[in-house]
Every structure is written in C-alpha cells, then in structure tokens.
Length: 160
Image (tube, rainbow, N blue to C red; front, side, top):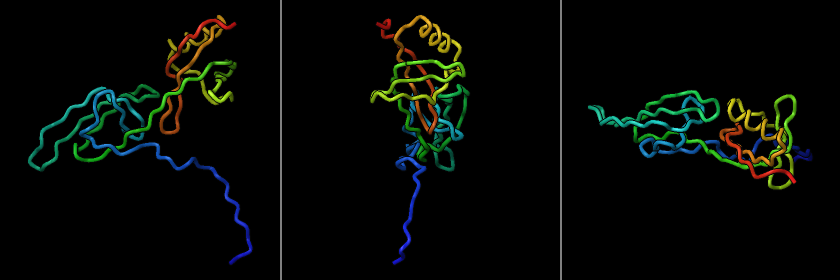
C-alpha cells in the first residue's frame, strides 16, 4: 500500500448521458432526435419500403431546437439512433444586464446568471418590454446536450 493521498477534482457531472438510444422506427413527428450531433425536433418522418437488401429506411427532417437550422438524416428503421434528453424549466426573471445576460431565480432561491437573452427577435422584445414595464415574468428554459436557451415567456402579473 502506498502512503500517498490521492486528490481528485471533479470536473464532470454525475455521468448521465446527454442522449439515449431509440429505435429509428419508433421516432415520430414532434419527437426529438440527434442529427449531426445537434438536438432536433422532428418535423417530418417518412419510411421507405424494404429494398432488395433488407432494411426499411426512415428519413428524418428535424429543426435544431437551439438555432432553428433544418437538418436531415436517413437511418435504417431497425437501427438505434440517439435521442436527446430535453428538459424545460421555469425560472422567474430578476434582472437583465447590459451585456445581454439574464439573472434568473431558481426554485431553490438561488440565482442563475449564465444565460443569454434569446436570439429570437419577437421573444427578445417581449422580454425586454415586459421587464421595462415592471411585470413579473417567468421564462421557460429548454436544456439539452449541455446547451440551454430561453424558449418561452409567461407573464404572472405586475410586481407588488
């Protein structure tokens, strides 16, 4: 036995995977799929018949949930493909800084300050206008594969 002490610095999460395997034939429209390492919402699925070499193929058209780009993929329907874990969390908006970051209140009472304002012009103006008017705003943050983005806004009434 050695007398040395080993110190490990934890730089990882709990080891939970960012994706899970799902059979291509079971993924439906409005589901989620990973195409070219990007989490996408499926907007179109078409399945071709089995050819002379066996496998039926699924043709997926997906829209990246963070940047809105259209991506396509063709996978044999019996094969597994990656589906992302997508979570939505509501936070109360506390502040908007000049450099485009938002300060959010979590359910535990802590603040979350590492999120930028959304790039969607419509949502961006709604958030800025509502905050300027002093409304109590709740933003919905979508997170998947290590990325997070504000995707929706709720007005829960004026501040008291």
